Length: 122
Image (cartoon, rainbow, N blue to C red; front, side):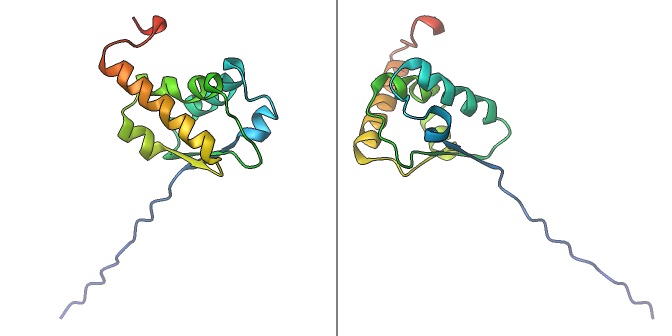
């Protein structure tokens, strides 16, 4: 009688994650579109290679529509709401900033639904 050895292998899926510290990237400069562009560039560069992008707002209050819209709002033109929720995670964000960010994203999604993707998207 022959005995056959069967080996089971487990596949461990490792989640590729990137953490972006807004304070380390921008310092106290979180007001202008140019400031937001720094964060947006990092997010876009990581988009294909990372399964999760964590944006850390520790020890910082942004309170700027221009910054949030440039860094994250314009992503709504390129990605679905579900994909953004799956891909991006916002940590240590002040309640006021979270409400402002949500308003900006909802406004951009509404604009997208109406086919008004801004001057650079016509």
